[in-house]
Length: 289
Image 1 (spheres, rainbow, N blue to C red):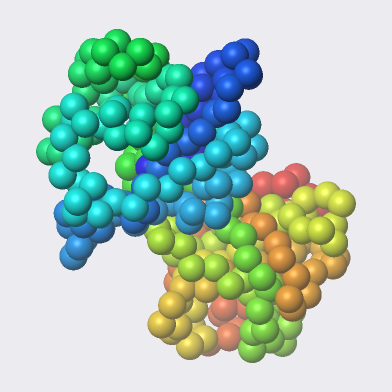
Image 2: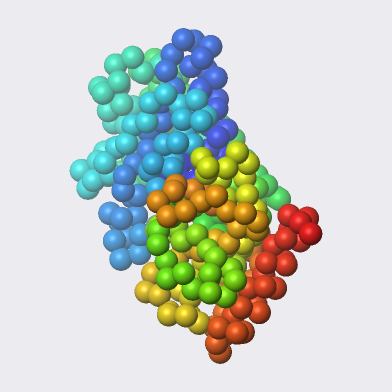
């Protein structure tokens, strides 16, 4: 799936990209849509860190030239492990090599492993290379581990495992302008991730075409229980300084540190006082006066 395009994924992808460049070949990534859990666990599918567009953008930055998105259907799930490489060869006649992680499983019932892949590769004269798992703090890096961290608000560790900063990208939409009335105007981002990070307040960095540099900010992600108890979580970001962005602009909000969980206050006065404290905490994160 390459969900998150984390450091473990990169060890596989970068090896393939470097090999393709040396040999004059093309580096391609094969991924699936939807996640296999949608087929096998429709009532409890895996919630994804990244949407397909974000994943494609990160893969392109790593030097991947082609993204192949295989539809994960019931028929595809029945593909026997021994049939996997012949299936690829039938669609990619010039396939030279396959790069996977050492723990990768494939084929019906996840019966195939790297040993089987190597044996089939020899038979078909396709190179097979497996990258060792990448560990951090004594534990393997995995998308599952990153999802758990994001759900707990630990974006600092999640970012270390990703090898890049977790981010929300979207277009600024009109809000109710409540932030302006209490002295803290916000940018409301149209963003609906599969995996929802923990609701709360975060120190963030905001990027967009209207600013040459990333801008420091403080963001609230959640249901806004003091104001309206939204049905869907919203991401609202206050820039710590002059803000060049407005409604309709596309921005990226990078999540740097969790400051506190979302809270319900008795009224706007208490909310305003807490936001002022959040701003002070965020400024301290960026060493701002």
